[in-house]
Length: 582
Image (cartoon, rainbow, N blue to C red; front, side, top):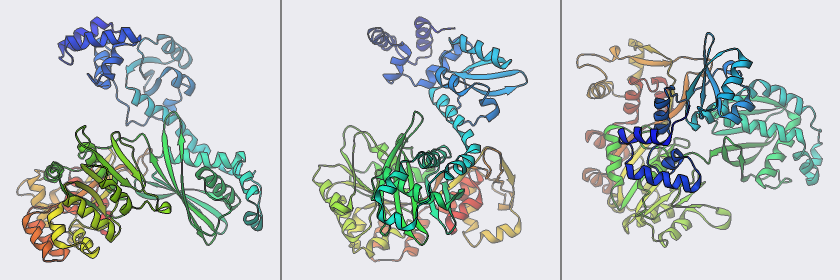
């Protein structure tokens, strides 16, 4: 079972996916470099890998499956031992009776299929898939660690030597020795691996009087992961300090550092914060995936008229675009999505960030370092001298940064930045508080986005309709008449239907997702700075009046955007209220 180059060429030309000239050129490169013509076509960007694999599957008469977001049952996964799955890129993913469906990259690997057939006594049904699908499922072998995790911690923690309090403060060498003991290394490695597999964004290690609590932040919610014996605390802290290159014998002052973890499946940058608390030192680690690609604006949840307004303002060569919201609301991700659109060979994009969360090609990213005097303000001052067309400032925190950002926007640059305010309209009084002149704000500000992150409902969810008491309660949070009008405009309900006729969804807990949610997306309000809004800014009008005017001009609020996504079955009303009302 093999697709010959001439056979592939015929199908590609017939489907008009490549021209004859492109295929022949790729074939010459393949012969010269001793590669497969398929790989050259993908490398040259002539065809996407998934499209090519689908075509091969069609030619060979083998079904194609995409498992990039699938979770495979442990019992089925283990039918093929992990070493064979890894070495041959073949995984079992579905079983019906005596039929076992296996996904693979190489349809010619008949020996492996024969081996699985003999050892498992199943009828093997081969399927073609993508390398990303194989990678996703191979990661799930490690999820079986979850059951063993508690035992590993208990067993290893028991072998850690006890250290007297006075020794910790006196003996740096003793701490270094403990940090390099095998049990402590295994505990920290397992904590990190487990957090990465669960797609946690943060790990909290919190010392208490008699134990150490470990919590993971997953989809924005902190969850208890495990409790460790108090005995393990000093070793874990010492190990993390060694990895982060921090002072081992400093226990009275906060410290910040970072380190990296890498394996075949993942590459993460870990940002570490150590804070002295009553019972010891608390550690928070922020996990940043280095392989993460910037999302598109549609993927993060922008849609319809709001998306159009943002795209229109991104086309403007000068001015300022602000993204607002509390900590952890996804502001930086939105900025990266915007830079992904703006990142073309014709422009110079420079950033000053704290920290650099994703590395982007062709963008000059600078990490702030207050210890040596590299702050947002000093970094921004230097960026202006680097001949930029577009500047991204991670956050406007003070008067000086606000003034420099506005001046940069005035002098022919497009400036992207974030601000900590609860609503889009609230950004304007906040800038005025930072001593920015209202007429300068009015002449530079193009658009303001406010956002929150809500959890996505899984595919399995429960339909329900609102009761009278629930509708009455919702009136506290929003104008329900306006919500109904918007739902009618979006064709989510018919003209004569009422709110009690709208079908909403609740999470349905499953084995793979106990809370019924998986992943997150944004809810937004987008406030374009129109002529009438400019007049209000110059008059130093308060945020409420600016909000009212923006709504009269067609701005949908975050809660209204949330209701649309709840009616579409993407999230739940409870989630929208959780992030808006908090």
